[in-house]
Figure (cartoon, one colour):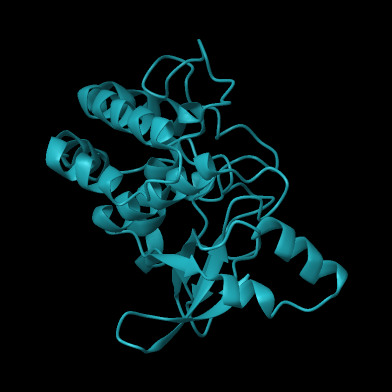
Length: 250
C-alpha cells in the first residue's frame, strides 16, 4: 500500500507500507525478517530500497472509506496505533520483466543479490515474481518478506538442510522458483565469491545486534532472536556456504 507519510522533520515521504494481516499470511514474523534482511542487504552494498518504520495512528484509520477495501483495512488496523514496515518509494521505475537482460554493469550486483537471497533463504525472487525494479540501466531490489523463514515461530524448516550444507541450495532448479539472477551467475568469478565470504566472516556481533535492535518491541522478538542465531551460524559457515554455491553454479 503506497502511503504519503510525514517524517520526523515534517517532510512527506512516499513509502510502500506493510503491516500485520496486510494479506492473509503476513505476520509480524515476516515484518521482522523483512526489516533485518533489508538492512543487511544495504550493508552488503545492494541497491535496495531504504526501509523505515511507519506509525499508523487511529485518526488515519478513521478516515478510511466505508467500502469493502476500507472495511478490510479497518479490520487489519483495528489495534492502531501500531508500527508498520515501510519501503521508501523509488522513482521513476518499472518492474523487471523475465525478458530483461543483465547488463555488464549489473553483473556484480546480480551476483551479490543471488548470494544474498540464497544465504537468507528468500524464496520470493524467482522467475515467476522477480521483485525487482528497473531504473535506467540499474535494477533496484524490493521485498524481503520471505527471508529468514526458518526463523519464524510457525516455520516448518525443523530438521531441514542449511544452505551451507550439501544439498541445502535449491533455487537453481528450472521453473518459476528459480532465482531470477541464477542464469547470469553461471561461471561466477572467484574474486566475487571470495569477497562475499570475507564480508560475511567480518560481520560483527555488534552489527548483528544493531539489526535486531531496529525491530519494534511489539513485533515478534522470538523471531528476531532466531535470526541472531542464524546469522551467527551463517558467519561461522561462510566458507562452506560458498563451496555449496560453487557447486550449483558450475
